[in-house]
Each structure stands twice: as C-alpha cells, then as structure tokens.
Length: 163
Length: 209
Image (cartoon, helix red, strand yellow):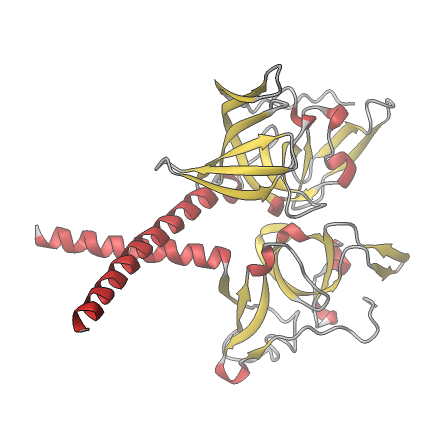
C-alpha cells in the first residue's frame, strides 16, 4: 500500500513538472540546440567544435508579432513543417529585396530571412519570403558552450539589401 | 508582536499554496487547449472571444484576434458557431483534403481563419479564379510543404486563390464537430441554439475544371 502511494506521488510530481515545463516553453522562453553552419560565425563558428551551440529563445515577441530587422528567429521550414530553421530577418513586410530579376516587395504578413553564412544557407533566397506565423521565437542569448556565452545582437547589413 | 508575525507567515504560506494550485491548473488548461482539443467560437466579427472549455468545465476567456465570415457557408453559420477543434492530427501529419482546418492567416499572423483543405503538396489544383465575375480557371501545382485551402463559399472567400498555397506549418488545428450555433432573431439579439451537428469531411469534388 505504501509503495503504491509513493509511486503515485512520484508520477503526480513528474506530471506537474511536465505540464508547467510545457506551458513555460510554449509561452515564454525556451532553449534550443543549433545544428548546421548556416549562421556562422554567430552560431557554430567552427566545424570541429565538440558541441553544438545552445541558444535561449524568448516567445514574448509572438504576442504582437513585432519583429525588427536583424532579429535572429527560429521558424518552421516552409518546405518541411517538422524541421526548424534559425536565420536572421533581413527585410520585413513592405521592404524591397533585389533579386536576379529586379526588385520584389516582401508581401504583407511576411518577412525575408537569410543566414549569416551566405555561402551555405538555405533561406529566403531559395524558398521566398516566409509568413510571420511560422516563427516560433526570437533568439536572445547563446548559453552553451560556456566560453561562447553572449547576447545575440541585432545586426543590420551595411548595404541594407539582400545582395 | 511575535504572534502577529507568525499569523502573517501562515497566511502567506497558505496563499502561496493556493496560488501554486491555480498556476498548475492554468498550465493544465494551456496544455489541453494547445495540444488536445478546445471549443472555438467562429463568428462574423473582428474582435472575438475564444472560449476555452476543457473537460473540467471551467470557462477561461482569452481575447484573440479571429476573423471569420461568410466564406464557409453553408457549412458554418453566418452569425457564428462554436466548434470543437482538435490539435493532434495536424502534428501527426494526418490532415488531408476535405478537412476543415484552422490556420494562421499568411497576411496577418494574429488572425486565425477557418478554411477547407483542397489539395496537399504535389497535387494539381484547378480552380475558378473569381467565379462571381468570370469563368476563368487556372491550374496550379502545390509546392512541397504547402497546402491549398479554399472556403466553401467560393464567391466570398479570401483564400489560396488570392494569397497562394500556404506552408503546412501554419495549420493550427482541425475542426471536428459543431457544438452550438448562434442565431440572430428579429430584434438583433444573439442567441445560442443547441445544434449538435458534425462538420463532415467530404471528399472534395474534382469537377472544378
């Protein structure tokens, strides 16, 4: 009788912790590992590092969907909803992006994202502007490994345009 | 003096305990309403109340920006419907053509709209561009990772015919049945009429061309 009670109490505790954890990660903040080198040197600067970078992302921005140029965001890939990508917002709705065939305007409710490492980045230059609804959060800090702990700043390119 | 201090700590502890229980309950409500199912009020208005009634029958009202309208007639009512929507199938990738889904609008991420999926990625869609004005029809292949959505009332619906195919990741949930219907009587009062019906996932007729 006593062991049943103990098991039940342990289960309840884990369930509570799980529910609270899920709510907090959904609504307020979370931690995410970064894979790939499309955002070098901001994340994962060298190929041979021991661990991937872990970043802290905040979800308060999802309340009003107010993003700015230069924000690093995590979003579901438009070509495969199960994957998540991390890129930097280069242009918001209403801005013009110079393409191979002239300049095109980013439509309403969308944004243009690009990786910092233009050479090896699958971003809006391939799949076009993404709707803001796909964004899951904004990256604010790198929290692992300890020697790379820092705040992720908004960086706007000098030329102001994609190319 | 010491007695007063002791009483104060006891009260503080008890209120902290109650607050913790309340916070845990809100977390449970959030998880149910995001990952399992919840009733959604579908109304022809810009500001909307999303009623979240979980199985524990407690009403928590959240204001959320939802827009609906006559685009889903005759399936959904013009004045408003309370529908039950579930959030499990789209995470497993099991929504398909014929399902009525809730999606985040690609034009305004704070709006949630209700439409029906017509085609999945890789399929060919033939549709009437603007049936109230002309007979012109177009054929489009849905790209990878996207879906094509249309309202049931093609004469008054702002859907994929206007903003193109939408990424699958924008789908928020699938509507499974209708619980209540709102009707408007002669004096413009909104009344709820209990109308247990099911929003059927019909096979989409392929006679558009």
